[in-house]
Amino acid sequence: MKNFDCIVIGTGGVGSAALYHAARRGLRVAGLDRFPPGHDRGSSHGQTRIIRQAYFEHPDYVPLVLRAYRLWEDLSASCGEQLYHATGLVQFGPPDGVVLPGVMASARQHGLAVERLSGAEAMARWPAFRVPPGLEAVYEPQAGYLLVERCVQAHAASAVGLGAELYTGAAVRAWQADAQGVCVQTDAESFAARSLIVTAGAWAGQLLAELKLRLEVRRKAMYWFRAEGPLYAAARMPCYLYELPEGVFYGMPRIDHRGIKAAEHSGGLPVTDPLGVDRAIDPCDLARVQAMISECLPGAAAQPSDHSVCLYTMSADEHFIVDCHPEYPHVAFAAGLSGHGFKFACVLGEALVALVCGEPKPAELAFLGLQRAGIRAAC
Image 1 (cartoon, one colour):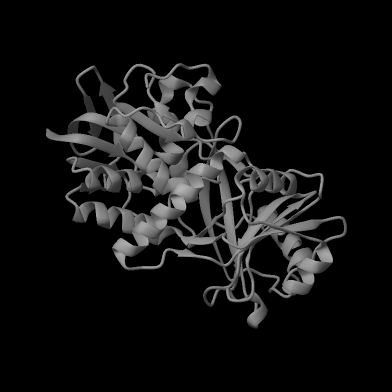
Image 2: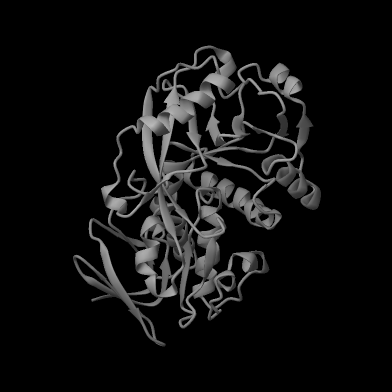
């Protein structure tokens, strides 16, 4: 049996970051995953993810995302690759909806640079967009996108370069803990360590079943639509989000031959087996995104040039759950990132390593703890 200071189960967005931060501390750390870093079977793939500061979901996310900006910059510098691209983000919605008031509340509380625009002003500035009647816009210039697979691969490669060991190709079947440490069994072998971090994404509910976290996995599709001309390039078009009566949709400008990216953030079909997800185009799902494209980005092609399917793991209130196990302070986890967690991967990985090293829980994480579920954590 191999022995380590720390084991990380799941090396996707948060897990690869935890592996890296553990190795930076000089810990003997092992990462365990069924798939190699940057794979397309979970939640952290699809080329790009939006990163933004004025967080409409809850203003308490802002200190975490500001730290994440610094950590992504540090990772880019250390790996020699630009991972974050500042295109800006324009978000459209009704003035009495969820998105615009939430963005402005976070901006006011934290002194963030956000500009309010009418629909006509937004269309004049960014002619690629059409703004339905009754919607206004907010623009955040410091927002942009992260290259999602490259971020995961950079964390994992940097961790291995610092001495971490990465084991892929075998599924984790079970883990046990006592006051002295943990033991993890995979299909191939067993591992022991003084501490454990569980960042298993769509498989978190299975590996943390005793906590009864009420996690739901949803199938989510992403599409690319060809869009010709300079209006749709990243130099002219920001990332975008629309809060519409039909749902919430988002996307990115054209950064390669496939065109602009578009997807629906709301909705999604429940998934019972993350390994058995149908990855073909679902006509009903595609039709909803096509309707948004037709109304809001009419210069884009009607048919997608490419598509991908990922998984959202939803918590009951759509906020992350980040904490220690109620019985074992040397076991920490992040779960239920609910489709908006990747931008925080670096800071959550850093925080989880601090927790299993016995450091006090940062105040910034308090609102994401197990107390929301009535479960008392051990740290």
